[in-house]
Image (cartoon, rainbow, N blue to C red):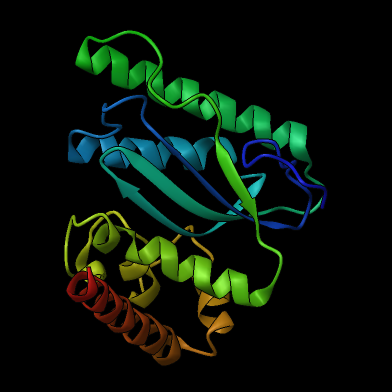
Length: 195
């Protein structure tokens, strides 16, 4: 793929992307449980025929999704459906909060996933995001991440079986996360002690 800015990489059929964005300034995207639920509902409504979601994490002021563009779907269709989704959520949030103006930063960031290794580390990165941002020390119990859904047996719209297959099963999925979160924590402690 050519060298594009993070917001300019075209969506290509059958490819994986890490997509993310945040609220403008110091605003929040979510201020209630209903906001989180509505965001996920609207996201599914607008993308259900064009994208497969592998993982996600919603934080108060930003979000992350790991997606795969469905076959025979291209950039214009993906971009248009995501635009409609952002407008729909923004209008509802603005109405609820009696606010006006832009809610999301101008450009949706996207990173093309170029290898299986990058895919695994992106999955992990998304799940550890609440720890990274000091929201919780227990990423496994964070309610607005797909981590718990991956361990559940309940029906889901996520590509759970494909995610677990990437790790050769649920036990390896859990072990990969636990091992790396411990190493991340240790690296932070060492960095703190050395500073």
